[in-house]
Length: 180
Ligand SMILES: CC(C)(COP(=O)(O)OP(=O)(O)OC[C@H]1O[C@@H](n2cnc3c(N)ncnc32)[C@H](O)[C@@H]1OP(=O)(O)O)[C@@H](O)C(=O)NCCC(=O)NCCS
Image: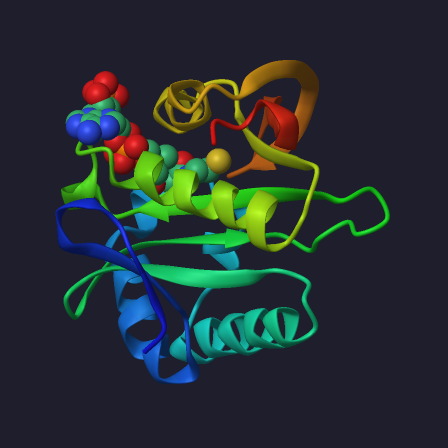
């Protein structure tokens, strides 16, 4: 119901319990591709796992600790974007995301990250937004780069996905550097 419009008819809308079947089906369809970079995919076996994730995210939202939103094109779920638990002591947060393959290559995630980063700085009053991704995940690294996030660090083998250790890149944007 409460949505944030993105370009080309896409919109952000909080994930609700009723979205669990759609969200699980989207992950299941793309399992082989998503598990390459997202550790939680292998722990998502059934619709109930997705439901538990959504319930957790809604609790997070109700306690001002982050959220998980769907990126919707009408009734089709293109992907999700969310905030990990907010570090209120340091006013810092990390954004996480994924997109179904058929929606890649159009700038949808860049647009969604722009909207979420603006929300973090303007609505939540956070000071620092991070995006972390494996060094080999060039598509993911392209999102913060396009938005002007600064690559600040490479944590060696800090990312264990699919049985492999990957170097982890940390990109960050500060409130004062975010274009108004
Ligand atoms: C990471 C992921 C979301 C990136 O998707 P994406 O489609 O590359 O990102 P965007 O939606 O921002 O689209 C950018 C692409 O669209 C193109 N594009 C077209 N129109 C555009 C526009 N108006 N604005 C920005 N980019 C545009 C860009 O050139 C870019 O394509 P390129 O990489 O071939 O140059 C997606 O690959 C994914 O879900 N991967 C699997 C899960 C994953 O890795 N998640 C992140 C874990 S850290």
